[in-house]
Length: 418
Image (cartoon, rainbow, N blue to C red; front, side):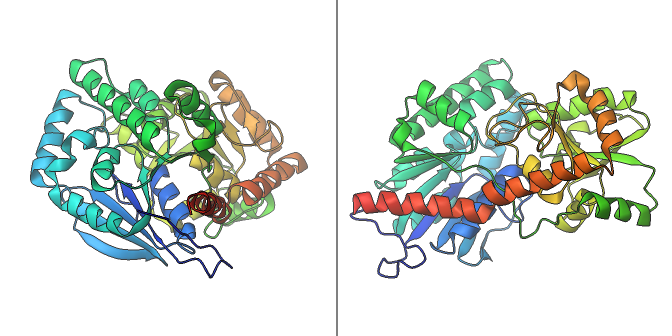
């Protein structure tokens, strides 16, 4: 491809070059964690680099090519009928586990329209990024130029935990590890969400430390509405909820979130005078199951309902025990001023301190931690804690700042090459 050049503000002599990103799902509107990361990180990066996100989407979706933020284009290509049929056959062989991503390396050829769209996008791109590893083999076919790997998790570790011990599942896991290792070996840079993931890629996959870039998950501070304790209590009183102690758990239908939701359902009956709200597609995990009477399922909601809910609840939970990367829900909680109770694993990768930004708790102690939180409502100590957590996201986890960090790495690498 020759010398690549990129531009940053004030770097007018350097030509603007396009970045092409390959993704196995649509990114707009952002609902789950992966969608939020891609949309917000790249919409801010698009202020300095034109970006095309080329997504393969559900077979019943419509193809589209639109600007979803200034400088950020989302190109959607639906799966072909043959692709969808083959995916359903795999799902029947490995029931209960979403397989769209892990099946992509072996099935993407069944959607030739996606190959054509991606080939067109990368043809004039200055930088190509595989967001998740599953489209890396196709990218390698389409370009001989440098590819960067954006690792939302250590996929091999995550899928090993999620997939059952069956012959078909083992075959998919073997393919996932092979694809992720190839992606790590061939990628010019590897972008990780958390330092722990970077260490795993270095120790287990042999990625040199100098090729690893940490860009943490962030929060959209432009949309987040911070509600301090005094305003929160006043809002509850206006709605007649001042006597209802309510806590929130939210997440996508992702196995670590599903496992955490099962934990909430186990201890909710021991807190009958508290109300638990569950928000997000993780509610689908409970389809056909009964839930305790003090648990309310909100499902997927729009941004207005999400912001309103975050401005009313007394606390937020994150009883996670598995998963890699960092949890975006934690940053949403902090940005909105919601007091947080989390396991240490749920707070992994974040620069938080117990008692300063949140309560850390073992899962078995969550009911007691909730009682302590209720006793703190309206007090100075809690007000200081939520204010500290808000400052933390402003200082370290604002998507705009994180995009600037990534842009700096892009400019540095381009300079070294140029």
